[in-house]
Image (cartoon, rainbow, N blue to C red; front, side):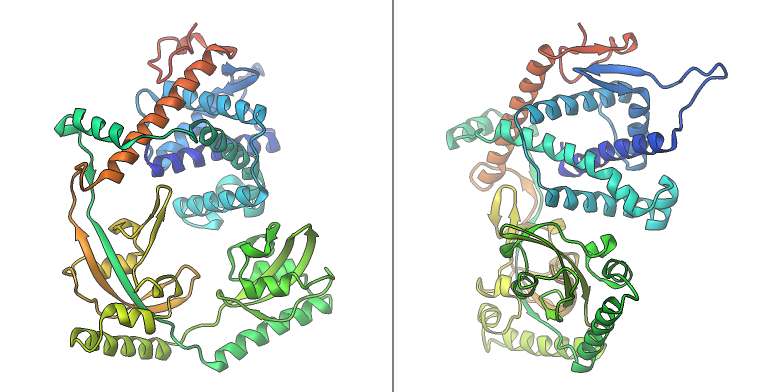
Length: 462
């Protein structure tokens, strides 16, 4: 199952819980004229019930998300829900732990995807008849359960490995028409320039933050309200509140000020980080971790500053083309991007499988992918603008270091691809066998109309 489908499935389980929370909160139950409840229990797994409404809600949400179920949805959807319950029950038994920070990150990810799908925050609130804050609260438990399931799965497969000999044997036995297709991959180097922000703009942002501090100190407004209204950080939606974090998890300048706070009633001085300018308020300290709320404001880069940075990069590009110095030398000395500067401008792709310099075009920032898509190997792009990981506007030129065209995988050129394929196959088999074993040792009762289903896992029907 690909990552996109896994993400959609995770969101669907969250949405089913959200729908159930809505029904419970509003006491909405479909009934017949005689007062009989229409909803029904269709499966029981252990002491957990699966309702007909659960399946219908997931079916509708799946259709809206463009998800196609394998086989009959009436059979595959309740089975997917039942499997999740098996993992969840074992995760609780094995004391799998997840942090509040992990849950909060997942909630925001799902909210962003839901908002993107439905069109706007307002439409999402209208659809669920709840505020974003209420939706977020409803999603927390389902996100916690999903993280527990994920943690349980990782525990089950954490010791699974494959040897080079196993990979070569698998490749040798694989029919030619079953070989995986490896998409085009590229290596890209960057030189970036950060447009200089005018002092007048910095002064404007600082004056805004001073005004917020003054309003808070005078009791005219709360920190949380101003954060919701004006903060440009993602957590501004929840009043600027960050979960408990250690010093190493925060920007160094931000951390120095945050950890120096002692009075929750006071607002910090203005602090500049890699993301912009902040004011901070202490909520709580717990050991070596701190919980704060903050308001972030980002100075606006002027068009003139962007034009100057682009012009400088164009001049640098011409010097490279004319052979005055190499792209690698320019990246090491001129580039503002600290993530690539020490590696001669070479971008790094960090994935679950490890660190590599190769990217599929879809994995690159869209502006970089567009810049190098039609370049010849060794060529340097014209200057362009993009947003870096910190949300700041930067100007850049890119060099296409290498390109490997899409092709059928070979064990010599694509050993890592083949190893991941074998490893995932082995992990999936271990998880499949575990589910089958758990089904046999778990009380299961299913409605008679599901007994003729073609299930992915054997043992449901007894």
